[in-house]
Length: 125
Image 1 (cartoon, helix red, strand yellow):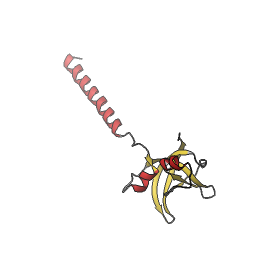
Image 2: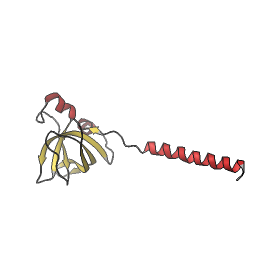
Image 3: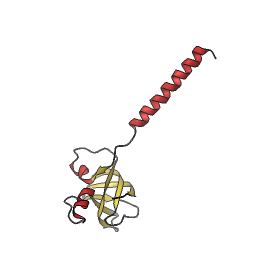
Image 4: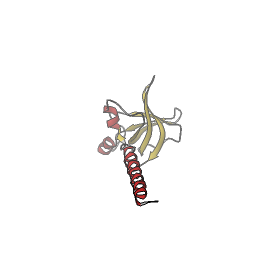
């Protein structure tokens, strides 16, 4: 290989590497939303992550509800929240007052809006 060909190959390789880094950066997901941010949002992405504290559970229906973590911190109770975000989940339901991160999609149903969970993960409060 001549010096010019080597230089051209190097430039193309570096350009491809930089492009991969830029596109990888753009694909990084947004930080999780708090429950109150979901409530006040005018539009939500197709898939989102929400963090909150478990305030209600219904094992027979496979649902639980989240309240905003800041509300829970203020009153130290799940009973004082003015908004509950209902979540449908086919896995084991998280325990009451546990802080969780839920990944899924918000959909309108005949029972109202639900966050249909793809994953539920315990997090620190």
